[in-house]
Image (tube, rainbow, N blue to C red; front, side, top):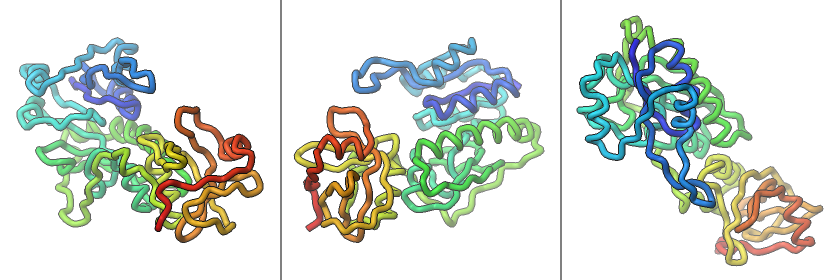
Length: 306
């Protein structure tokens, strides 16, 4: 089996490793090196770093026509896509015998789009999973030939769930790709009902809403962890919130009060403990450490509910 692999983030690396076990990977395609992190230094993608370590040929096309040129005339059996970061044109999808197989981190047709894990957590879904599908011209609308389900723990962040699905997706790809290529598995058209969209997350969307219930507030914190990071504004500065826990004391909505050494944030319908946070310009720290630095002095959230 001759294959190509398209992917960019760390979550795609396990599937690249799995593909190497069942196919000859002719080349890897990933996004161009970009500035990352607080220092904005130019860095290679995790997929590029892994591919180079494993001795694979790497391409980083910047334009659609460059991507097409990579595939024309290669006579590949299949290409595998995992979070590549670019929508593929129909002329690219037509260049391999069996099409382009996508490892998608949701149970399609639920959560089609760029942020399926975070959207599942925000919605309070009990389960998510992995779908192997054949890409078509739509956004994650192609036929599916294998799925695997996985429960979402009530304390898991989007990063933790994604890490587990990355491993699960690699297993499903390893186990079922050959069956698809030899037509032992037939792709089935997705159901028209139950489809939901999972658009890319934005920093503005990660601004925490104090009108949420404690449960909904905690879901939002988990869904935006690690990126873009849920946040509040207080004293004119942004505070990122990475973990919250249940809290029973009454605190006025929009106020962070230090109670028994713990920072408690009042919501319109309850309260939560700020377990881990990151003040502007500082490293993440525990809520208790932050409270110690405040010497017991609370603060008011700038956008407190009216």
